[in-house]
Amino acid sequence: MRKPKGRLTDAFSMPDDEAGKPRTVLMLDQLTHVPEAGDVLQVADRNLPIAQVDGRRTRNCLTGWKLTGRGCVAVLINEPTDTLRPLVQRPDRLFVTWRPKDELPWHFQTDDLPTFTHLNEGWNADPNDVGLKIEQSGETLLAHMRPNPYVYREYEYAPAITVCFKGCKRYRVTPVNDHGWYDGQCRFSGLAPSWGEFYEISGNTRDDMDPTPWITMAGSGTRHFHFYLRDEALEVKAQDWSMETKS
Image 1 (tube, rainbow, N blue to C red):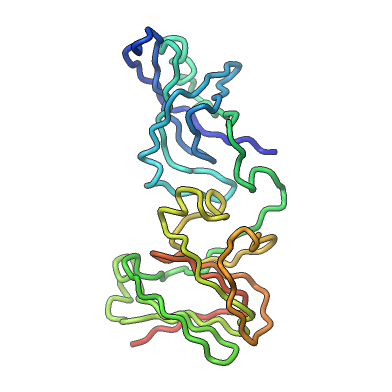
Image 2: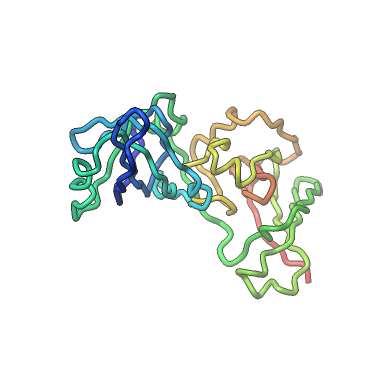
């Protein structure tokens, strides 16, 4: 089983607590998982119980393939700062791990991990759009949405784009939004390269881990497509896909 890890970047001294215990804040980034109070941080040859975690900055982070880059957090340790600061001053930016008090997500416990292929190169859905519209046309599923004109200026005057899934066997719209993705509520949280993108997922996609029922169509496609939108995620099993622009 893989262990969660992060990079130790800084240490700050805090006043002793009411019981006279020393307090040090350690800054961690490039996290593969967000630690919690009660986890035991393993730094070099030391085991340091985490007293408190300030995770307010994690919602602005992105995860990457191979479980890296989960943002930045501050953890409170009841140890003197002068004994921990040498660990931070190492030129190789020490990577640390920790022993969680609770069970880790499924992808830490298996080597059978899915792979993600990023599909929406040069375009994306409007991040403020709540108007996903689904239409069935024979064996083709049509997903209508507004494009993102802020990043992709060539779509500034395009009122809509349509992602077409040919040979669609089934699809579902799950309630995973950005908050749920960053909070670990999606089975691909910490595993998909980032939220808000369109992927084809190969390998074991663990469809059983989401209770949202599938809607069956007449196609026979088995490729797994996954699009993270503003308020939901679109999952589709189909033969192929294409994107069309409405002028």
